[in-house]
Amino acid sequence: RYVNRLEELRARLRAEEAELVAARSDAAAAGGNDARTRSEWVPAEGVPGAVRLDAYENPKKPRWLKVTPAGDHDNVADFDRLRRDLRGLKLHTVCEEAKCPNIGECWGGGTATIMLMGDTCTRGCRFCNIKTARAPPPLDEAEPRNVAAALAQWGLKYVVLTSVDRDDLPDAGAEHLAQTVEEIKRRAPELLVELLAPDFAGDLALADRVLKSGLDVFAHNVETVERLTPSVRDRRAGYRQSLGVLQHAKKSMPSVLVKTSVMLGLGESRKEILQTMRDCRDAGVEVITFGQYLRPTKRHLKVEQWVPPEEFEFWKTQADQMGFLYCASGPMVRSSYRAGEYFLESLLRQRAAQRSSSPPSLQAMQH
Image 1 (spheres, one colour):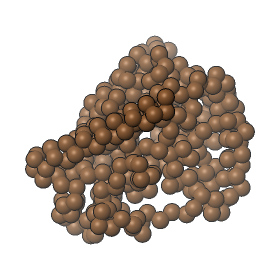
Image 2 (cartoon, helix red, strand yellow):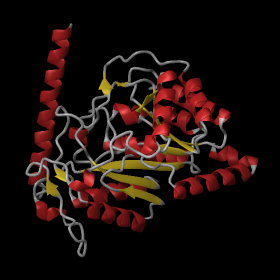
Image 3 (cartoon, helix red, strand yellow):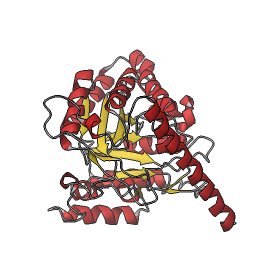
Image 4 (tube, helix red, strand yellow):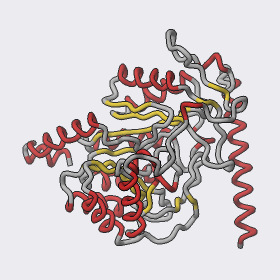
């Protein structure tokens, strides 16, 4: 059995490598989107030093990617308490599983992103460090209650929930996710809930079950530009499929904030980033984040370029001009990084107040 599994993995790696080579060849034929052409990476006139570093010529992380190690923050007590609580309730966090570089800052401040439906994903995106398997262990039926109990105990104002993909389940885990949000809202009605949801294989009825659970922010990541999607994400994920889920979320629940995230440094061009932003905005996305792709292990995609802070500032300015309500953009920014930012929290509470004051007939239309 193990020999067969090993051969399957080798075949998959060969196929993915072929797709990556083909994608780079297509880019070169299309007009020189060569990942190593530094002149392409001056985003705008008057932005000093905004030239990407070639990660092949400069393999060491640049100075702006240095972070404080986990536990080295002033509020270590919060860091330790959060870790103990999570272990005691058998809960997982994407912070640990994905080796997020901000774990010290976020956990030190008493905030974590809870990962639902276990620690094993049915998909194998080439940038992600989470374990994969065709048939992960069964769902923990007590998880919705345990998560809600932990969050009520912590006394947070804002929480981010994420999940692995569970293509092995008939509903892709939609009911489990919805029950978790509903249980949280039952125990802590004032707690703002953001869910980083899977794409449900494009099944919008399953997305609706989650959208109508009472969450405040529906997030789903496009991850990268359209051209690079086949070589970066699992073959079951698609750029247009993700946009379709985001667009449906905004149409189905206008009062819910819709969010997505993009990694930079994978070989995308300036034009492609701008097009991705336009596509997301056209789909109704209101919040977007940009961060530097960091290779978790040598088994994962290589970093093509180190993107300087000045370029991230440029994309934030572009997002503001395009009409996004909020943009977090920086080398160390991740999807859930500082999600409870003051502006977002204020905006969400304002929307929640509007929902509660709407006439019953309007609320029915929104739900």
